[in-house]
Length: 218
Image 1 (cartoon, rainbow, N blue to C red):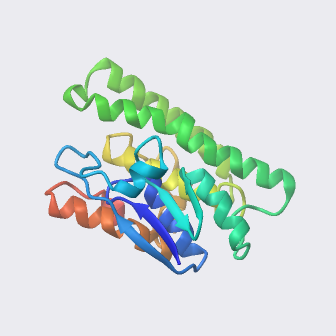
Image 2: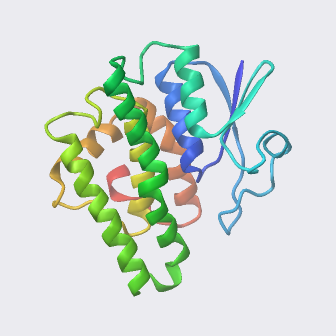
């Protein structure tokens, strides 16, 4: 059986969990705990052994051991082609892969900046990070157009941006009525069974630790 290592506050681990649930795969979920400082502590020995970055997600299937949420996406798509989570059209599939990459590497750095500036969340650097996130939202509003999902059909691109934006919402990079299409898209994503199952540990962790849960998840 597949063993998938994630954590209750792991954006990237939750991405992998949602994808595995969407695929209908049987897997053992191993949750690596977070301490009060939101660090992966204690470190799980298998995570340390497999991932030189010392973080989740990590996937083990027999003698295969891989890490990184995007690599796990690619593996799951090959392992279980249906339901397809990359569009089968070559160009649309390339677009979806680019959007998945952008969620992690273009948008999410602004959220990381806000995480590091929580001591000065109203300061100029934090305001600049929020402005950059808002510009990205406008780009995704155009990308979405009149589609239900970012690349037309539901894909890993939606999973990646949904999770990244969830953390953006927690760190003051809010979606507003300036992007009504994205608000509708987020509501549609939140209603998916696999998404609800994937984010349940995160919601529970926030509640137990006395932190606010984003309103759209309630």
